[in-house]
Structure formats: C-alpha cells, structure tokens
Length: 155
Image (cartoon, rainbow, N blue to C red; front, side, top):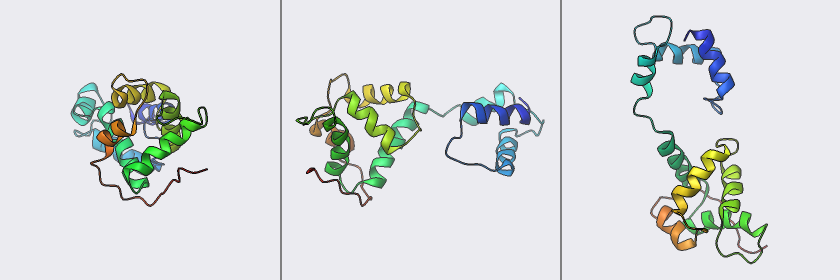
C-alpha cells in the first residue's frame, strides 16, 4: 500500500475519525508504519504495528474512560443512561438496549456503528434484557470518576 492508497483508505474507512490529522502528521504516521522505509506498507508492517491491538478491548476501554471523565460518580453515569430509557418508558428503573444505544451515541458521538454498540451491549449486559444499577455499579463502580457532570434524576 503506497502513501496515496493509505491516505485514501484512512479517509474512506474513517479509521482515524476524530483525530483531525494534518497531511504532515499522516505522512509521519505512514513513515512510522514503514520501519524499513520501503515507501509502501505490506501485511507484515500491519501485523508488526497492530498485531496486539484489539478493537473490542479498545471499545470497552473508551466507554469506561468517557464515563470516568464526564461523570462525578457511578450514580450520575447510570442516570445518564437511564435518562435515554425514560424517553420511551417514563417508569423505567433499568435501561434496555434502546436506551443504551442512544446514550452511547450521545456520550461518544459518531464513534461506534450499530454493530459496535450491539457488541458493547452484549458485553455489558451479559445476556440480560436490562442493565440494573447493581450491574452497572459492578461494571463501573470501581472506576475513578473525575468528571463534574451531575444529572438530576428529577425532570
């Protein structure tokens, strides 16, 4: 893959969406991925650079980090997800995949497609129909919340 193909692939696949790289930074990235300075990338270059990368683990980490950075505690983070469930079910005490999808898209806009969100739901819900506060607390309660957002449970 030449730089021209690499550049086109980056833009078409949105592989670096959100990074807003200049052409110079993209050239630097390409050069770093081409350790032998061949002027092109081959499969071995990709394996050496990204062989240990797991998108699924990264996705889980990104959700955890976004919650930690944006909310002051686990209850506020849960209330954020529950708020999207309450749009469809005003009496909800737990959130379903529908509320989860809306909350993830609001928390990290345009980062995950529907397939990614479904993976995250299956991972976090562990097959359950809803996620309770107890389950959410088990998943995220031990994390250090540093955000300042407070979401009131009252409308």
